[in-house]
Amino acid sequence: MKILLLGKNGQLGWELQRCLAPLGEVRALDYPEIDLANRDSLRDSIRASKPEVIINATAYTAVDRAESESDLAYAINAAGPAAIAEESKSLGAALIHFSTDYVFDGTKGEPYVETDTPNPLSVYGKSKLTGEQAVQSIGGAYLILRTAWVYSTRRDSFISKVLQWARQNETLKIVDDQVSNPTWARMLAQATALSLARAGNNFYPWLAGRKGLYHLAGDGYVSRLDWARQILALDAHREEQVCKEILPALTSDFPTPAQRPLFSALDCDHFTATFGLRLPAWESALRMAMER
Ligand SMILES: NC(=O)c1ccc[n+]([C@@H]2O[C@H](COP(=O)([O-])OP(=O)(O)OC[C@H]3O[C@@H](n4cnc5c(N)ncnc54)[C@H](OP(=O)(O)O)[C@@H]3O)[C@@H](O)[C@H]2O)c1
Image (cartoon, rainbow, N blue to C red; front, side):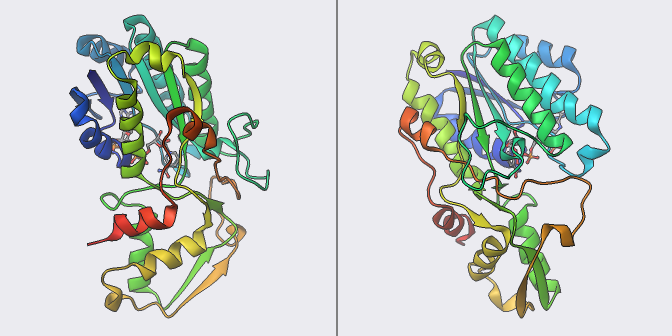
């Protein structure tokens, strides 16, 4: 299988490069070798690679900055993926693209399924939704995997922030009204690679028969506050923490440029029913991610 991975240095892309390696020849690129905002050079790179599968792990993920860099967010999250989908289709390559729980407004009150109507609250969420819609309308053998609260222990993420805050402050205030599924990038990458492996040599028709939108995130959901508590309990260097108490806060206590959905947990049963795979419970994935 000849795979072109875009976004190899991101949280997910880093893990994908390693998980995809046993499946065949992986060409892995990232900015500035490829620039999703420069569609001509993006198209040239894809054509030159002649891939059988394209995996797009790139994204403009700076949720707050996107509010003032809307054009760039749309270029990377919407127009870029549209160009990738067009090239995939014309090359007869399968495409795996990732999206976000932030396409929802967070008011449903229970985990979102794929047929729920999106209503993004932020430029980031809107740009990702426009990207999804472009991939869907272009067609071909595509999977769109919507995920949530992705973390890795390699790049800055909620994990590293919480560990740092607890080393600098005696009291932490963390929101308990934002709830979703923490997703370890490595588990997401493994499930992505395993679904491709399951497709075998005849992967194009196999994936074309299962094309569409899926939710794929850590099993179960939690508030940011309880997630932070669990991170601090699993800290291998707890003796370095100076934090004595963690207090619940409201999202409205910390005004940010972008509005975030409050309850954006994803129901992943459709992915499990189709591919026979499920990400582990968020607590056990977190334990594995933080084990030293
Ligand atoms: N992080 C989350 O909490 C979260 C939640 C839900 C869904 N998702 C989705 O999951 C996927 C993976 O996210 P992630 O957390 O792995 O993101 P990430 O760590 O921010 O990685 C994104 C990658 O895209 C690259 N990139 C940015 N601008 C680019 C451009 N113009 N051209 C080419 N590459 C560019 C980045 O390069 P640089 O490092 O050089 O900027 C980085 O390697 C994305 O589709 C994201 O929307 C993420």
